[in-house]
Every structure is written in C-alpha cells, then in structure tokens.
Length: 151
Image 1 (cartoon, helix red, strand yellow):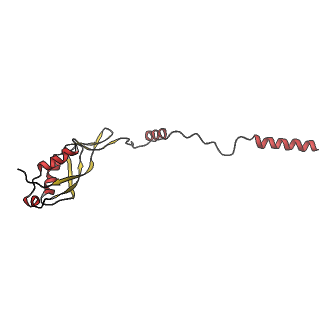
Image 2 (image 1 turned 120 degrees about the vertical axis):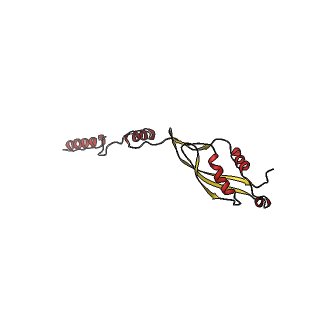
Image 3 (image 1 turned 90 degrees about the vertical axis):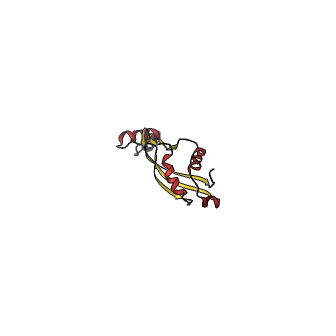
C-alpha cells in the first residue's frame, strides 16, 4: 500500500514539475520599431512623411540684414532720434519660394514697417519640401536696424 502511495505521489510530482506549457500563450519576440513602422505605412491609407526640408533663405544672415539696410530709406525724424531696434516679421514662403502674407509682429514705426512689407517679397527662398513635394511654410525673422542718413 505504501508503495502504491509513493508511486502515485511520484507520478503526480513528475507531472506537476514536468509541465512546460502554461495556460498563457507565449509572446512573440518583439520586432524592431522600424519594421513595425514600415508595415503600418504599407497598410495605411496615408503616407507618413519621413523627411521635411524647411524653407531656407538663399544667402547668409548677413546678406539678409544688408538687403534691408541698403533698401530702407529712413526718415529724418528716425535719423534724428537715432532709431535702433529690431523688427520681427512673419510670412509664408509659398511653393515657388516667394514670401507672401507678410505680417509685422514687432515693428519700429517711422514708415519702416511698410517698407519692410514691400521689400520682403523680393527675398529669394528655397521652398519647403515634404519628400519631393514643395509645400508652403511659415517663417519668422527678426531684422536688426539702425537709422542713418544715406549719402
């Protein structure tokens, strides 16, 4: 009888410890995020833009400031008051690289704001691109100015 109890105990113990499968399904090893992303892109209705190239002024910052300083005509009252400051403008660079929808965020007055609005469309920009597609992009620039009398 004792032998029978030992055999049942051993069989029960072996089955308990030998069980390798649990009731839970095994998790698949996680694949890399880039593969998951590519799969999602292939199966979605929308393409995900991976590369956005921002609009860029075709020149240096120094050339940008020089352009405005050379083309703005300061009034006598601005020169007498030694007007110095910064003007901040916001505009949209369209698909062809031309600034449009120009707006003064912080102006200087003395007729300078209007001159900057008239001069800004003459700036040359490389338009923004999403992939190969040119798109509109908002730009915000600050131009330091100091009034002086042109000879």
